[in-house]
Every structure is written in C-alpha cells, then in structure tokens.
Length: 250
Image 1 (cartoon, rainbow, N blue to C red):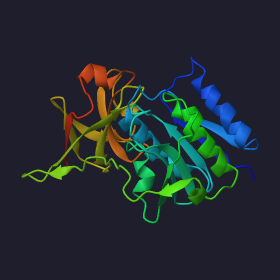
Image 2: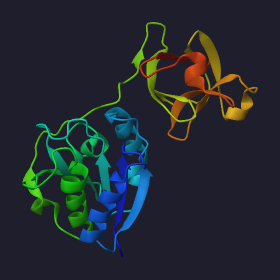
Image 3: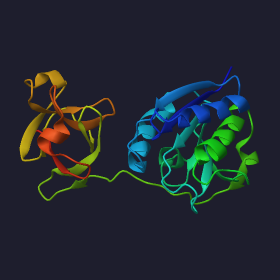
Image 4: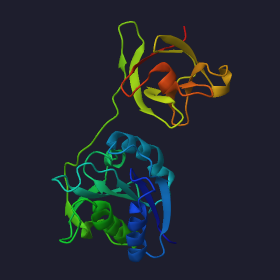
C-alpha cells in the first residue's frame, strides 16, 4: 500500500515552493499519496504550526510521513530532524514544531545530514523532502542520521487554579474564522470570562444571536470564544495570550 506523505508549511501557494517539494517527494517515492494539511500557517509562526500538527498527525494511518516546514531558523545552527513516533514519521526543523510527536513515550529521533549542495534558505526542498521520501519508500529511520537525545520541545501552557477555585487559562490560537481557542479543556457547563464578558458555555455557535459572543467546546475538545457570523478576535480584541477564566457551574 502506498505511504501517505502530508505537507504542513507557511509557504502559501503563490510562489511554487510547495510544488518544488512535491517534485522531490515524488522523485524519491513515486507511489506516495501526497496530502496538503495546510500551507497557510502565518509566516514563521512555529507555535501555530505546532498546534495544527497536534490536531492532525494521529488522524492519519500508521506509516504516514508528516513533512512540516515552518522554519525561521533555516540555514543557522538548528538541527534537522526525523522522528518515529506512534507508528508514524515526522520530518522538520528542531525548533519545537514537532513537539506533539516528541512528547510520546518511545519515540526515536535522528538528526539529518545536510547535503553539501543544499540551499541555505530552502531546507524544505533539499533536506526535509528527500528524508521524507526515503521514509515513505521504506527506509529505516536509523539510516537517515545520528540519534538525538534532547530535541527541542514546546508545550502548551497549563491552566492554573485560582484562589476561588476557578481555572485561569489563556488564548493559544486564533483560527481563520476569528475564533479564540484556549488551553482550557472543555467542560459541559459553567461560564467563561474574557474581554470583560461572562459567557455561559453553549453547545453550538448557533445558540448565540447573530453578532453575539458565545463560548463553546470546539472539535479539539478545548473551549473557544466565538462571535456568531463574526470574527471574535477582532470584535473582542482577543489575541494569543489573552487571559480566560473558567468557572464551574454551582
């Protein structure tokens, strides 16, 4: 069965960079199935890429190779990694973007060699894509480089308990709809406080009036703040790091 290779980048699709990587992937693994997760990660936003990867990487079948290139440190001294974790493979820079797989017990990590002719500005094409193709073609991860014992790991901040028993969290990302996604794991009832508002948790966006704010548990299992048919981040002035308080129902 052909291996799946996914691509997650901040390249956009206007300049042909994604196409170049796909050419390298298909040259090395001609039977692979290429799947675009997204190429619209905000430029150089490693944290947004990490959170996107966390949502999707284990949705794909065992044997999938995830190629992740959000790499503001390209050409400098950060390592290039290949990771085997939970029966899947990941390839990308050692800047924390691969953390969702690095946090799984029993993972294996190697540092990739950079070919002598590799571009200093496009490791996605010249370092990461060839390694991903080799993995998709069946190469053992140990043949791609030397073991790494302490790759860089990023973690989502943990909510903390306040003196009155509430949970204090924060906005960790804003999606394209303007929904503010928090680090608070969803509850069934209670209220969410942010931007001077106190919002009861609802089940769907449609339970708010048009233009009204609403707090729900999103598909990721995390509490979100939204504006029905609107952009909550703009309307409520929410950004990554904005404090959010959850209070359980009495």
